Length: 162
Image 1 (cartoon, helix red, strand yellow):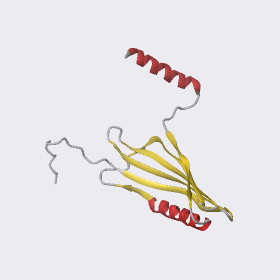
Image 2 (cartoon, helix red, strand yellow; image 1 turned 120 degrees about the vertical axis):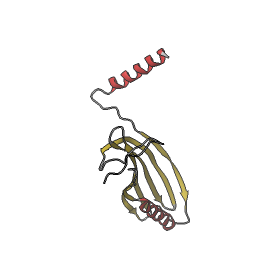
Image 3 (cartoon, helix red, strand yellow; image 1 turned 90 degrees about the horizontal axis):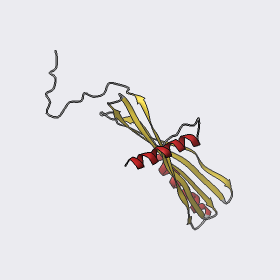
Image 4 (cartoon, helix red, strand yellow; image 1 turned 45 degrees about the vertical axis):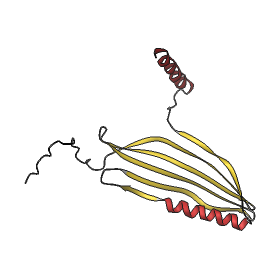
């Protein structure tokens, strides 16, 4: 076990030395390998792009907060469907998912962030689908209002005062 800690420490030191003056951040990205799909015509391929765009728009959700302080938000960044020329059309979008919850121990809201970067291109009647999925570090924000009272199960509740 001591040898494992030693190796982990050396690895961490190596990371710090490899990027002096740079913050080491935790995040991850996984590519979506290109996948072609054939359609009858270019117009049918473009119609499929329009369906993907419409579905992405339906996923957008303004930030909501429930009674327990959990937050949910979905945002979409896109230029929409772009016609490059008569036989080539493209749709690119970045869909963000933000999910948060109260951290009573920190008196903050912790929000995790993940994304889907979608790229769809119609070259003639063939759509190529690619992109990436990933996540970034959680962010922490002050609690907007006092958190709900926490009580131990079975513990008596403080009586209401007149």
